[in-house]
Every structure is written in C-alpha cells, then in structure tokens.
Image 1 (cartoon, rainbow, N blue to C red):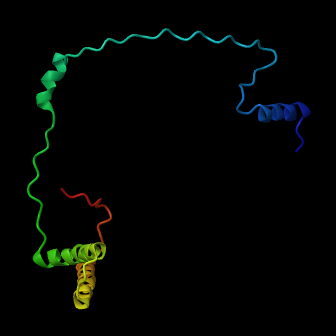
Image 2 (cartoon, one colour):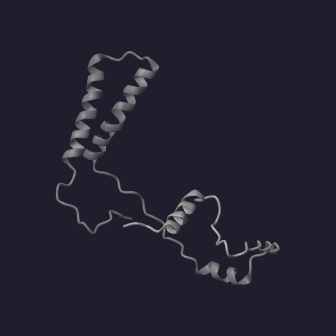
Length: 136
C-alpha cells in the first residue's frame, strides 16, 4: 500500500514538530493569544458560619474501643520468645556482656521454639474469599 506524497509530507511534518508547537494550517492565519483573565480576590472570614456551627453536633463520633484482647498464655510466651530472645541477644552483643554459652543457646532455642509454635497454631482451613480481613 503506497501513500500519496503529500500524505507522507504531512506525517513527516507531524513527526518533525512533535512536542514543539501545535501545527497550523498554512491557509489559516495564526490566532492571537487571548489575554489572561484578571485575578479574582477572595475574602476569607475568620468566624465560622452559623450553618457549620449547627452541624458540629451532627458529626459522627466513633465509639471508644474497649481494651485490646490479651493473648492466651501459651501464645504470649511464644511471642516473647520470638521478639524477646533476639532483643536480649542483641543487647548482649552491643554491650559486650559475657553470658554463659548455654544461656546463649537457650535464647536461640527460645526463638526457634516460639516461632515454630506460632506457625503450628496458625489456622490451616482456607480463608473466606470474600473476607477482607478487617476486624474491629
């Protein structure tokens, strides 16, 4: 399929002038730019309008949440092992305190046992596909 020469020239002109300016027809005279509109001044009042003050009473105030639930003792110990043992080991390494080798291995074991216990206690049944997981 062969293009006509003037069509090829039109495409070449478009590509050559891409991004620089808007192409204008040769027959049309260039349009004069319109003057910019005058800036509009807006007056701002410091006082709150009476309409908004009336609706303050109608605003939604969420109820206060109750105390957060405490995990069962076995899971609490597992979480302490997962976060507490590495924290103690990090503190020992940073401060340079000498601890018995058995205590160091016990802290590593507490981390591994706590992590393994939490993984085993995870629910294994499939999740509801329509549940987004949000619980309040």
